[in-house]
Image (tube, rainbow, N blue to C red; front, side, top):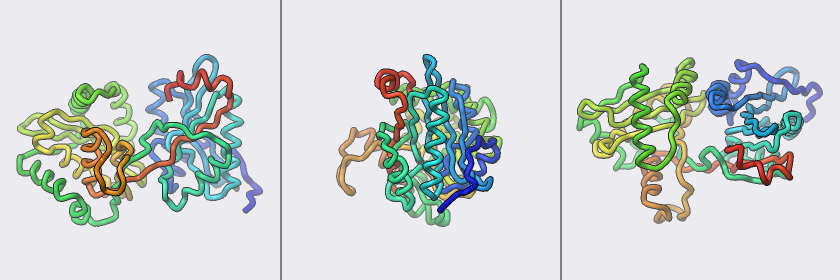
Length: 344
């Protein structure tokens, strides 16, 4: 196929977001609102699109970090590839040309492409054929996806018996779920995130960061903050963000009481129903450790990791693996010494 009117553009936010929403591999991390969130933490942003006769057919939203007079380019859950090799080659060429102008050490891409999908040849042909090296992913490389096409009753029936029992348990114990709408609700969420981070040993974001995510996606009603209360006190909270096709469970926190009353199970059930009401096709439970077992045999992982996998998979979803990150090294001599300093 030939493209006589192919051109490289920098699409405005409304045009770009519309393109991402309708694309099979469009993802919320490629939406302009996500770039706005990341700009509050020191990232710059650039969007590059490939058009034919003014129709946007491929592109990428790039997050850019500056260090020492150099830059690093990062494309989370992107680029958003077209269906034709020529378009995608034109996109890579445009990315490289622009990156070199900004003295980029490397371009790291994390395509929103699931291994085994009917479009995976795009990744293997375009990125693999360009001689790029694979790298560790920043975004979760393994996750659990729940197909939201079935009726709500069928979604509940597809869960494990234990998960259905825990949802009923939470309801019988009087656990309530409400939608957070105020700054005080955000404070509750942040406090529970901090408690979870301290217990599990992982870093959490600042309140300002979570507030930015919440506010940016609230503008299009694509974010949901849920708070679970037991005996009148909040015990768990979660924040979900949706694109046109996929809702993602991005953040969640809870205290010890939440495990006793199964509050987290009830929150996820409410989130799944919300995602379906939004018209999403998939609910992404956002990351599990890589399994080292075979089939459905014993998990070769620490107990807490095995528990996380069982918790997320118990909602009736299936495990998926994304392609790893691909890195286009533009300054090889510098990359060896400076790549880690960009903290991507």
